[in-house]
Image (cartoon, rainbow, N blue to C red; front, side):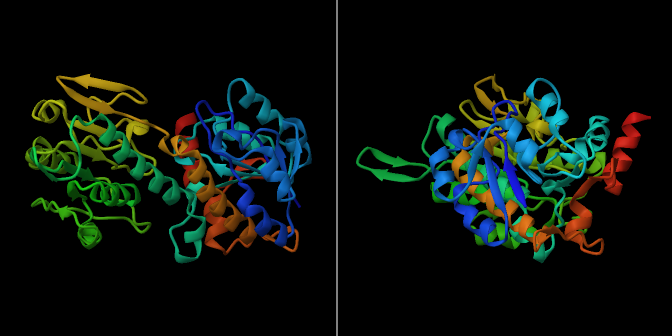
Length: 384
């Protein structure tokens, strides 16, 4: 079975789906790997590194024409320019694996299904023990949480650690992380390594011990929450809850040098947590990094992929931080993807066990139709 790796053509995307380090594992599993020339260059993986591991190089047309499985990072949407050509390159029965942002997909997903390709969305991976090695969303969130702190440290006009010098004592920066999922926990850990005093908040009380284990203080607000869903994600809270939450968080935000927000709800607009009035209460020089910018933002003033300067406060709204650390992000993603492929294919053939939650929950399209029940409902709602 041939796995094809095309060069990513999503604007600004520098990652690659498979790296040379995983090719030995794929070879032992019976896969051949065909890589588009230059696919890994922006992530630091030259063509020669793939060839040294036994991969073949080819053109984009060759990759799509010969591959049984097409492995991508940003697999969807396939629209506009080269992306439209990629849609036309897909064929009946071909497997497409990658990140589809499926819960935000629109009618274009039906067009993708009509190509006849069988699509598997790694962003729909169930959060079960057996699937941990395949959890690409967690891997990419880890990178995003780390890089968010680095961006904040670069923009903040003061240093993170406390320093005792002959010129006096430098007070440590105060960092407030909102949302203690994978990205938030990595942000906490990174800020602590840099020497900041860190506080964190999450609507899920169950994460308190994780926050404290990283050396941060868990901010407790006197609010009744509905915690998390069966997948471990935070549930959407009522508007009244969110209003009270913002009121109680105002004091913590005002005392912080850096605020990093990571709160998101699958398939929904990001909750508004930091209002304009709260930003006005921060002192000049403070920095906000909003990791929910792509979904509307946790901060009222966020602009996706822009730097907003507001009364001396800097607000960053990056939408693809993993791509800014393409080498390690690609290594992590490639391991997730390899674990999935070796689970999906046995003895050179697809092993599609309908009772396997990994297969069932990630299969997006098959036989010309959108087959994932939740995604199909969303697409139907949009097209009505």
